[in-house]
Length: 353
Image 1 (cartoon, rainbow, N blue to C red):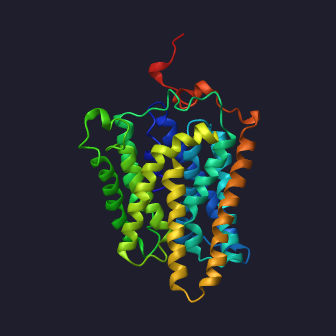
Image 2 (cartoon, helix red, strand yellow; image 1 turned 135 degrees about the horizontal axis):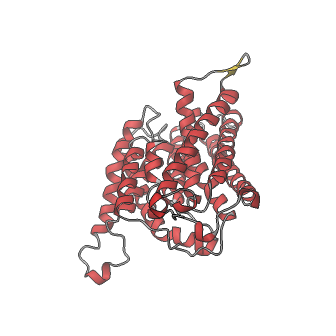
């Protein structure tokens, strides 16, 4: 999921596919190693040593996924130095958030780590807001896709879609959400098939990016609530609603982020991870409150976990944005954003002397 899934997903831009894939590997490899150390010192430190096993490696991979989600919000207008700093700070903040939730709010480990979608999405959006460049148009001329890059991105989605909740015993329920997400997107497109061609322009049709986002959003929503979802019907309904939310958000909310809030969301992480993650948290919250004998206490303490996660992610994302914005890190110029030639050497484009 971390190396292949996100690596292929980041290849959707025609002029930035090499950088998207390679920088994903850079962030993933660095984040996994840093997360192993932090997880050992915070949760597995005993007699001067840290314990490293399969469980700690799986946890580190999920922490790396949070950093890759943040990377999706600033993809194209950052350089490798920016991404290295972002990965170190983001993984550190996410580990600190887990430690706070587990020690002060008694949140189970699986619940604390599955907030990675919310933390990563809002960390990246906050960082993107600080790094906003007024010179970039709402739709950069190089921010385009084609058939080949979309195909690679679809392969990455298939690698991620089946593993969003693969770390829990309730993971089998996630497979019920994927068909419902895709069905929701096809239904939105099918509703327009009876209209004349001129009236279908601009509406949600069978666009590959919407299918990808819908299927990913379902896994995100159920993944956040998987510890309490024990009925396939609940999982399928959650996946259906998350798919609808993701497609509509990518269509209408993403363009407004840049024009209204001055925040560029390259990969649409708000629609794919942020909003579905909050929706999954709400589903889990209502199930826990309705089935527990300590409903008043849960109703008071559970919202604090979401508020702490959002507050910490937004604050750290903004601080990271201010740090990487220094000229010391040589931020890319407007004309070099979303362009592989700024970082890679292509023999067929080299100038012979």
